[in-house]
Image 1 (cartoon, helix red, strand yellow):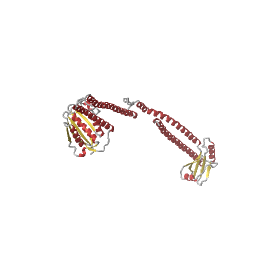
Image 2 (cartoon, rainbow, N blue to C red):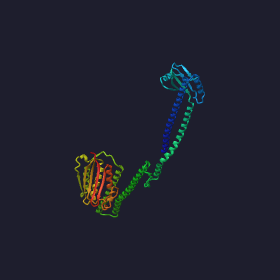
Image 3 (cartoon, rainbow, N blue to C red):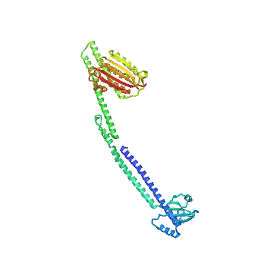
Image 4 (tube, rainbow, N blue to C red):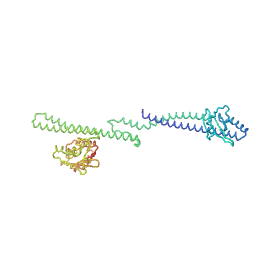
Length: 456
């Protein structure tokens, strides 16, 4: 069922319930008022008749009662019965004895109550009348034909009004829901025009303050993120293709030259050594591309293994110095770390080692002295690791882009690299619910600060 139809039916149901409740309330209120008015009229007539009988002469009473009986304004089928204390009927206009005289009614009236009850088609009221010498029970009955007719007419009118109102409620609900849902329909129509080739399009945000406006704003922000992600993906694929093509072209060219003529063993070894270096570079690049693709796809994760971050640093130092004897890696532990538990993080050991090794390698590679100073300390509930070098530095306009895959600063052209290291480090740290910040000055060095949550 469409939302518009559902809203129209809900509008109909709500309006119908309100109308029915209001109609029932009006009907019963009118019925109660009619009943009260009719019994009051019966009571007045009963008291008036009793007054005539007991406070005037018999001739005068008969004359007045005869006139009232013939009066056109007299109640239809009016019956009045007066009974003394001994239950003898002293007066009755009920010639056919249609009104039943009930003992419990007489007892209640004599106790001082005004009693009303129905004896179809009559409505009866009983009241007590006092004279100087005795007490009398006066029963008055009548048929409220006019009141019943008015109630019947009111019932028909209310039913008709309810039916018409229900129809109008549905029509109003249909148009109202259509008008209310129009902005959503416009958004849907606009979204249908947006494809992978037109992510630059945006939906209309309206006033931007109501729910539809906020929905449109949220959707536009999602489109911006998608556009950015697709753009980065395109750039990543283009750059990855270029980086992969370079060593492959080099390998192909060297092998073609090698195959042109016979060469000495020394020349073969030299050429194969160069090819081997290109293959190693290609393998390293492929591994990094696969690793950055894996970490980007996983996003922030929940790890179970506890790892000591100081052990990661010592292991990375040892492995890097094994292949780079001229690198100087100085690790110092702050005095704030007084407990071994303060060095523990939860994560993936191999990924953290990749991140730390990349930061150490970058610091040494881009420094003339090939030196990096590493300090780590405990800050509140986190472990802070600071990598500081005295290298070439990073330009201020480049710092914002260093976490983009394959991006390299303008002052790093002469130094070999792929531009994958820092994006990979950034993704690994994010996956461990940590943060990374870079501050740098050209010619004075770079400071990289990593924060990882501690589980102590």
